Image (cartoon, rainbow, N blue to C red; front, side, top):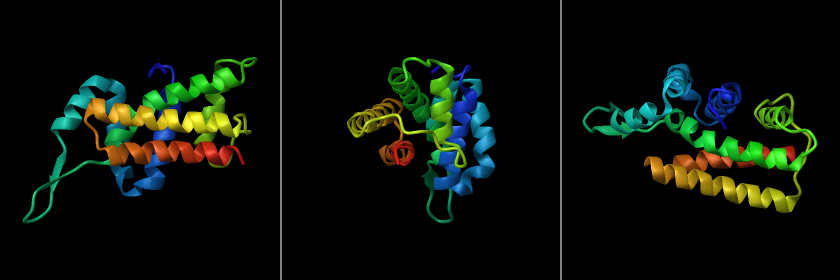
Length: 160
């Protein structure tokens, strides 16, 4: 997924996940999103260096979900768009993007398009993508699992 062409989709998905799983991070969401969109590579280098230090007495780094959701969702959504496009071969491109966007729009769930077998393969692939990216970018594996599980849950709900 080219970030430039799918910023709206990435933003919608990331915002929904952060607002549901870590609503206390909403105040930093826009700034974090804008930094990621401006330069994803620099964002990842800065993220590994600039975790905020909080606490009295003990110093510890806070790794927020908002900092990991963008670099993890980018390849996940890329894969998901490809899977949807292959499933709805007659209506390519925009149709796939619309379907994926509806996953993250609570009042507009998409129509089911995957079989249970396809969904199982897609879920496993999404988990693999998240784990691989978390390892590559040195992100918290638990947060990567949280992001992939949030996407998989939305896929499962769309199948009902």
